Length: 218
Image 1: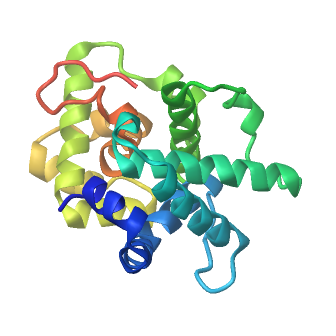
Image 2 (image 1 turned 135 degrees about the vertical axis):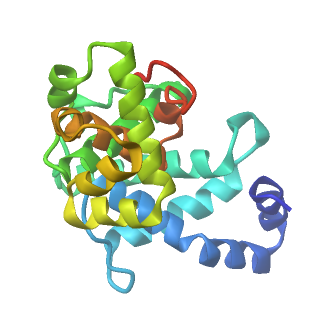
């Protein structure tokens, strides 16, 4: 039974609802952490309480017209968190730069996903402006960068190195792909951005990247 089917059961079955919430608590914590760009304490956190309430609300209000339940619940968690931060004047994220009042589900989801992306980039001291300035100009170079990014994502050791050291495992990439060190270093920020999109929960951005494509766009 997939997650959407389980949600319909949980609407009427309290035990299944409780089981679903408990099972997906790590997912809720991840959404909160990505959005706030901070550690979420599982035992004592206002944000987690907001997230759990929002996830429960998502179960009640979900239907198939809203697409994937996880995408829908992620959006609802972020909406409720925004309300909480605004009410408590915790403007740690420049929300107004990325969110406008909107009743359009897809438009708001794109804006919220972009906030998550910006927060993840900041962990590597990368900004959107950096990507605009440093994105490869030629299709062949973008293709190489995409291949490097997928190589990292498909190799657990390389991905863990990147996430822990906040830098590319250049020596290993040179040995594996026979790509010049200069090429990797020159496009470091662009490659890291691709890895973030591929490896994290960013489905709308991910649709612009394909390992077979000659051009990858952010």
